[in-house]
Image 1 (cartoon, rainbow, N blue to C red):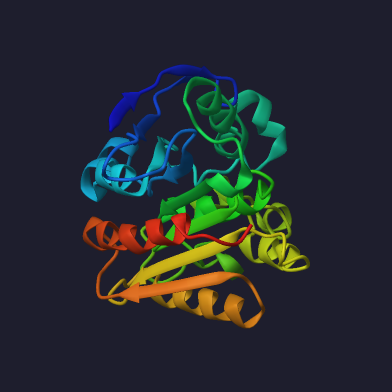
Image 2: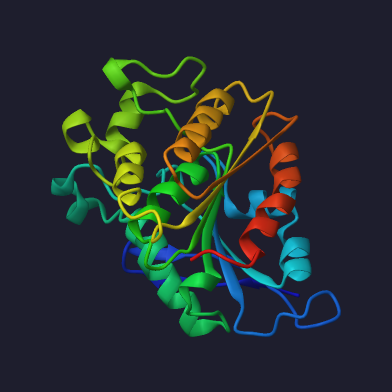
Length: 267
């Protein structure tokens, strides 16, 4: 198993970026030869790639399942491009395009990764779970499966109010996701993105959503969303277990997530 630290200049972010990659060996632990299936993983709010990789033991899961894991640092961006297009050129903060286009292209050029859609996945925790959902749907030609661990759903300040218990400020969310005029119906609006994807459910990525039953922040929103999407015909797998909104639960949930990602079947 190789633990790689990459460094390249991102055109989407106009700065150097340092993705971390766990590359499996073709050995007794797995019988998966290169080019490898690849999971692009997004950390949570106020977190980072190094912290997430350390607490969730990605090296082990990469080795056992024969899957490359690319850790992406997304700051506190929610993995969206700037909400107001007028500012994009000035801020150079195209996080969605960085996740869905640039880093996939760069890592495929540098490493023995599969270029096939059926071998390419995206997942994340909390803020990264939201980012995985919206970017997995936005770039559904690239990603065949989406994994969400305690995804930050229901965070948009509808009617000017934040979800009770949210650590985020209303002004911050509006700055990131846009005012209602720019948010609703856009790719950042995961409900609208799901409705559009459900028009052709046979072509949409397969989804996995996991929540801890003691998570005070997102358990109810995540559970309700998963069950509602299942009822509407989405290819959704839902998993819940005892746990909170923390790395203890996310480390536990990595096993069923990896089993879902590497299972046969689906587009």
